Length: 358
Length: 254
Image (tube, rainbow over all chains, first blue to last red; front, top):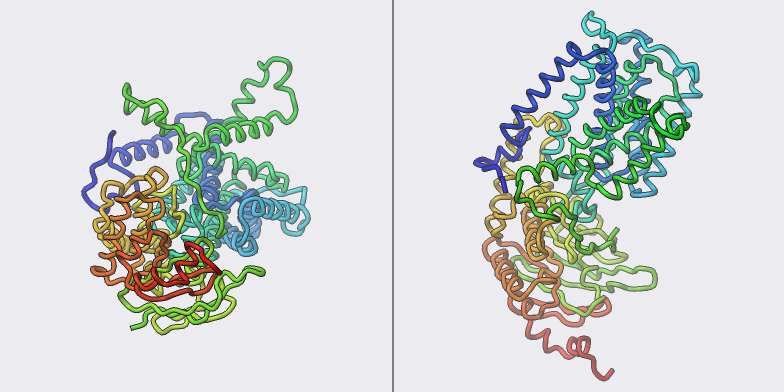
């Protein structure tokens, strides 16, 4: 099997795994920077949406994929970010200030959700976060003085140092920039003690505690980071949709985020990106084939959410490591071709684990 | 010199007295074993020491400091590390990451510096890594360094858990059945390591163990428990021949 030769400890804590990674990612970023000049406005707009969902996906990945805490109300944080950004902008605050502020506001909201749910896990946490999501959604609808209620309001065009960030291209570059920043920070988090503490909490709370990890503190930190990142995505989302109304932030949006991390692959940042690509591009794919489907399936209402649901269930059943896991298996297959071992990717039975101390 | 002392500690779960007025002292530099039949309260004592359970009565002192009400996550930074009977490793992380988590109580960098991975964090990480490498070399785990725990055999996991506890750089090490699930050879290896931990690293060990061969090979003193009460306390030979202990294990006329 291919294995990288390591000569210093620094290699294990570098930003990218190896030199070929540096090359390919630089090439990828360069290509992505050129996209608006090459592809039409429709594709640029869609990719901008993918980036925004990828940012939120990375946020949820840190919470669910790395700390092991479920959140079915992530859409609420996107909403908090979007409203914070847009309401402040209508009051005349410049975008360069509202963007970080929406992240900070959402992070504070995350702490407020995190503290009462500290002792919850599994189903209970899922229900609590679901309730939080719908409470926030109701606030968006009813607090008309600030949010404009059901009527919503148009989001002002942001400017950075006098230059207006307009249209699909503006949102595209802004989202790409924020996505790269968020990924950089997430990798930093994962290679430093905070990230290890998060993984420790996910895998065994009782021994995490015995190793000196303050469970409440780190769970709260994880909630704050996750919702803060999602708040940043929210601010961008507001400019992406250009018109804010409360019905953008319903439960379906939260389910989409959950789909992103599960379909993409739990416990990997790549997974968040793959998942965002899937979740944003599936509706487009449906739109393309809709008219050609037999028996009028294409005209059925609710086709899209049911497909999302079906895919989510199938992935959890048959490919728990998601798209990224499948990608790794494919890579291993071709690397070892023609010597790959049948069943080499088969899941192993885990040893019995004590639940007594939970 | 007394490093750790338990005074009349007790814990009740409903009507069951799992540990009932247990008193013992552990001297610095010794290996202190706790034996007893199943359900005697051995692991419960460990959970009391590592503060996962709150004692209903009694007092725990470590280095002269009362630790009866210290929160569980501060126990490690005081210098008490432990292993678990059924292995509580971080299964979806590599061996290296597991050992680095053992260094958590020595982390001093603030969050901002970690988020940006500033040079101070980078330096601290390298220092932790060097400490971890010492433990890896000590326990001969080099070849598994980058392996996920989930892919390691049981015997190796036992050793990794010992290593993770050593990464805390403890004064007092609590080993909960270090030989359970190990074969004869691995158990002998464990005995050597416990000797080395005591002699070379100067760490005091409290050990819960069923394997009497291992207990008598490494322990300085042994405490026998049954139904949460102390039956006997003394050298391995004294305890093994103590009539109460014999009766608890083999049975006899009441």
